[in-house]
Image (tube, rainbow, N blue to C red; front, side):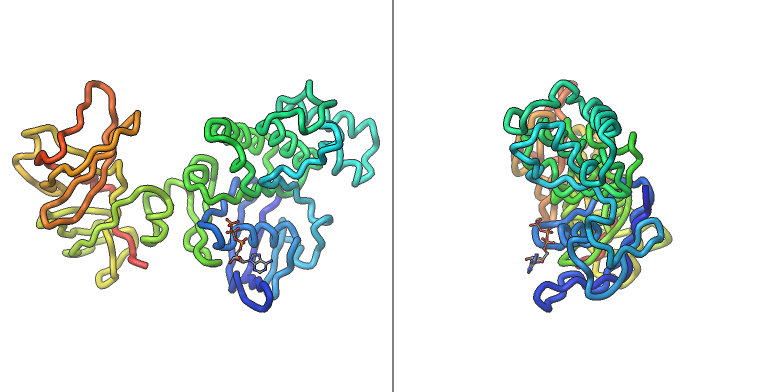
Length: 358
Ligand SMILES: Nc1ncnc2c1ncn2[C@@H]1O[C@H](COP(=O)(O)OP(=O)(O)OP(=O)(O)O)[C@@H](O)[C@H]1O
């Protein structure tokens, strides 16, 4: 277990900086996700932590110890790659034993530790199989066992679930998380999948073009995104132009389509260029008649399109004044979505927030 400190690092490829003076702290035992779109630098951060590349400037430390110049094989990192990188001609047992043999661990300890690890990943009966005779999920668990058996200071996971189908990946998410908690190992997980980041992580670092846009807990980054970029990347959000009337403490008053609206100020100040961020589940259609008296956070709208999603229906609306709004209405308990073309009243949660426009 170890805290990881990345201080003011610069990484260049062919003289071009792709990470330019960035810092992050990953707490001891934390499941920390580096999230962002393709090419934003996620793998570069992971390679920097693993020791596969050295920064042109700055420092990387594990548990307070400077490892910046320490080669990868001396850093005590367990790694799981997207393609698992198992040895195809070695049994499951030998794949898992690899790191222990490289460290000249005695044979009796290898048997005990590999056995315990295979048991933990629920592959005790598979020790003699070759990787080709395993399913994708089983291979993934072998890769995890191989990374954990060395009892690493740090576990690095590079998009390890992206090769699995959606249902299997969902099951593996809680499996990986349970094992990570059991071992208590500081874990850095790289993904471009915002849902995985939100469900699995203690903390999420959202990257943008090699820079750290925001580091926060899943709830915070989802409900209080620092920018329109963060709001948009973390889930379906309506980002609407509003006229802010004023900000007092944590509450912002604004106008949208002529209606008064209260929202969380989210650190925005008077004069900032802002948008109102309304998540799809932060708006609901009021029952006919319920919104007749008007009031704050209530908007008149016309339904333009319905999309059936199974557990819910996505409703697209046009607000008075022309802005578009999407919301999610759960199905069930006899809920019926209004017909396209019908006039409705929409209520906006006061929990929605302003975000800086960048
Ligand atoms: N060896 C390299 N030489 C030159 N440029 C590179 C090299 N590796 C990565 N890059 C560039 O550095 C930037 C960051 O790449 P990186 O692989 O870290 O992104 P990523 O967020 O992991 O992307 P992806 O999700 O597509 O894997 C990209 O612009 C990429 O083209």
